[in-house]
Length: 338
Image 1 (cartoon, rainbow, N blue to C red):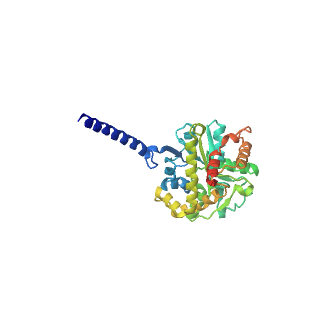
Image 2: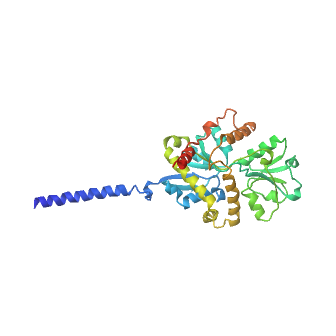
Image 3: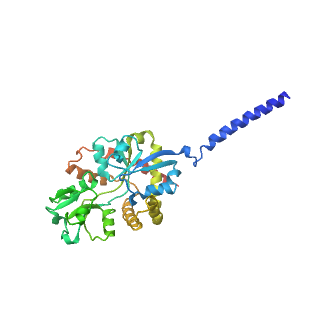
């Protein structure tokens, strides 16, 4: 009787131990949310935009989850901008408007590095004029009022252009407001080809464009940044994040209709036509790159030279310390390995 009782007691203990082990093993399955690393990506602007489609797709189609990531997309603002939030470690990753912001940030001791460049030779920054203004070329802007957006990446680009071509203009800080331009009180104003360059035409306005790229000033777009400390202390997390973004970007380019729906899902008032046009422009610039997200040092050098001429960064600025292609190299090396 005692042996039987002892056997039952031991059997009960064994079952309890087995259950504990089973639960622990079960918690290691990819679908268990407890294993997903929670991270935040800080976007540069507080609105839905076709330029952010790779991150929308990565969320919706499970690319982040595939790499065991639970991602929160946060909108940027003047106070909560990506450079600030990533520098202080509040957000793990950020998306900024271009390499110009990377360099100005690092020149002010922000501990950030670029780990991906999405849009190459994007040339999103342009100058809009109206056909009835008789302003067709840059020379026609001599002495004219031009709408700027102080504090915006476009300001450095336009100033580089005017300095290079010895054009003197009267700057008007109008931000994102195009009312003065549309009313004819300002004959020219900055714009992005993917936003006002599309939306104003969609509203029925006829426009001319003067692109800095026609004068040899090529600019690039969204640049992904992270904190130097995160690269050093958790490279695996950075690697998984980059893998997810690359695959989501590839998917978004192949599935335009799904990408449009992903945009509309985040703002049901967003124009479907605008979403298609934004994707068309963005995808073309993504494919300008030799590999998705690859950072070419020569492109950064051009940006550095331009910023030095404007005395925005010092000539001693070190490009090599400002970016890290190692995670991209790892991804593409593994992708081509049988």
